[in-house]
Amino acid sequence: MEKYIARYCKGARVIRYADDLVVIHPERQVIERAQQLLSKWLEKMGLVFKPNKTRIRHTLNAVDGQIGFDFLGFSIRQYRMSKYKSGRSMKGYKTIIQPSQAAMQSHLQRLQAVIRSHKAAPQAALIQHLNPIIRGWSAYFSAECSKKAYAKLDYLLYQKLRAWAYRRHPNKSGYWRASRYWLVNQRAGWVFAAKQGESGVQLRPHVETPIVQHVKVQGNRSPFDGDWSYWAMRMGKHPELPKQIAQLLKQQRGQCSYCKLYFKSEDLMEVHQVDGNHQNHKRGNLTLLHQHCHDQVHSGMHDKHPVVEEPDEPNGSRPVLQTSRAGDCPA
Image (cartoon, rainbow, N blue to C red):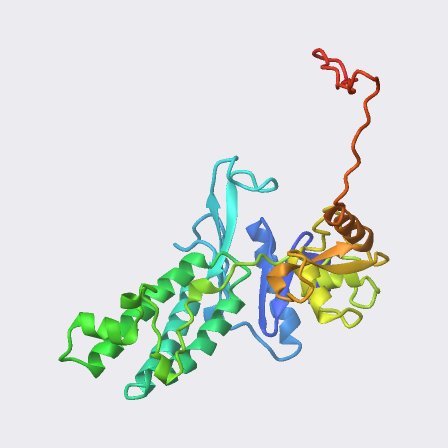
């Protein structure tokens, strides 16, 4: 399909996943031409486009009253920006990809269904059913601009949990319900959490999921090329490396924490304890260094007898750095 469109619609790009696809091109005539060609191409296999899901949209200007499009749960749209806020290749506008309203609504309905099915269940059971759903949905959208969507979902989920608590204790005060189901009176904020006797589980908010921008794999890279440094830095694991070293490589983004140079596949590496305690194997105390950098670090740590300069003359004078004039190099 991609080759077919590239042959007859110059410059058009096809992005396909399963039975969903998008054709991108700056000119509408080319897009309409691609739609006709794809209809004929699919017709040979007895397939047709679904009319209510097939549309032409512009990511910056309104078409039929709508701007941008939704694809695989994401909303892709461009916004006008000044040249100082837009990207280098997109002067005057900026592309923002975030969860679509339909995806957020569907996720919220799923959470609502779980809450309704746990009307009389213990709070811990409700949390244990909600957390995997929140974790999975948030991870799927964690590579794009999702922080505002996460915050909005957390607020709407709080409203539903508040109604859940009210239904269980309609005759109690709001202060009592907040103390019973949230940690607000324990100076931990509005954290929906069960008591310690009920296993002490806490609801995982959407906003706790970090946003990590996706970095494309370099075109000449392959998992079988033997460059364990690149793949461990990217994935945090590699069959030829211990798990600890691979995780440190990813955490340090492939750089030695001493010399700040990138590790190469032929480099020798060693794990260094920052506090000097070789029994402390906590991740926050470990860092990955080149072998020669590790030697330099330890030689500096154990150098308790620094070299003392001897006087140049009997009167005790010592060499002094001559102050340079403007434009001159220091002596």
